Image 1 (tube, rainbow, N blue to C red):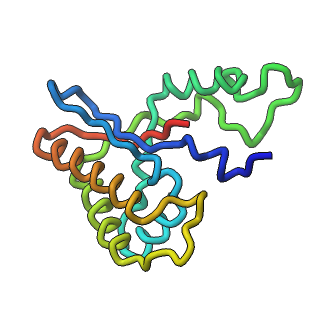
Image 2 (cartoon, rainbow, N blue to C red):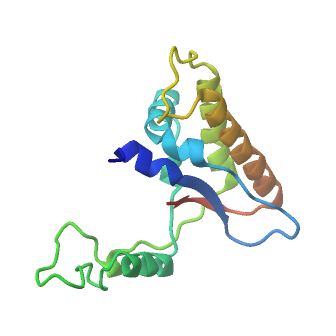
Length: 162
C-alpha cells in the first residue's frame, strides 16, 4: 500500500501569470518545492518572510471545476450524500483570484534560497523528501521567472498541480 508521501510525489508548484508575455517560457519544475512545503514553511517563518504557499490563489471558475471533479455540487455537498458536509467550503465562498507583484514573491524566494543553502547535507537521503539541491534548483527556476515578471510588470500567483 503506498504511503501518503508516495501518493503526493506527483504534486508540483507552478506559476500562473496575469497576462501572457510573448515568447516567454515560464516553466518551473516545482515538484521539489511542493514536496518540501513543511520545510519551506519553517524556513520562511525563521526568515520572517511570507510562506511560499501563501501566494496560492485560484480562479473561482477553476474552483467550480475542481468541485465538479471531486463530485461536489455548488453547495459543497457530495452529489450522492443526503446530508451536506459542514467541513466542505461552499462554492459561493470561493475567494476571488488574487495576484501578487513579483517583488513580493522574490522576497520569499531569495530568503528561501539563502536558508536552503545553509541547510546541512542529510546524513542519509530520504526517498520521500527532496534533496536540498533539488529544492534549490526549483527555487532558482522560480527566481528566474519572477525576475522576468518583475521586469515586465506582470503579477502572478502560485498554483498546485496534483
